[in-house]
Image (tube, rainbow, N blue to C red; front, side, top):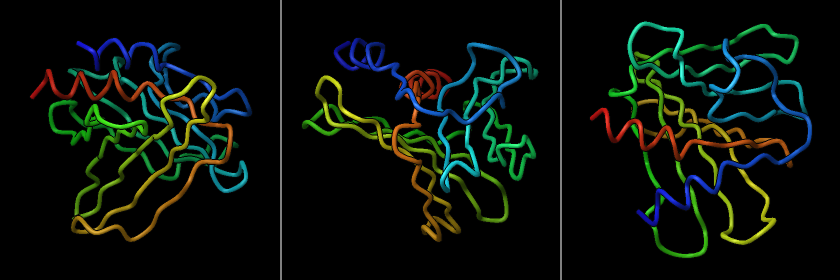
Length: 155
């Protein structure tokens, strides 16, 4: 219950330039940030426009050209929730891309008023990190806590 209350309170935005309009419906964005000095963006959506319970991962140029898109059943996503301990909160959701590749979207923050959100993407091959991209400062918006709860309920 404590985790649910905290995750609901942590639907936050960082304020600066955001990644764009990847999600097909307003209100379905669960994570977003810009990367590489604003030249790229990543967004995770609750893909309610798809048949079934799905989430969508989009990595794209800010001119709208999608470079990588994964639409996956929520029940098959891998979630790493905050463990509930300490002053540093972090959560992640991993999308499988096939052929041993996966994209882990993460956010983290200190548990204090006004703390900046950090976030990014870890690119994995056969469960090993082969690349990591960190979100530009001040661009992270996250409601991955809700997606983590949806994954837990679906499994």
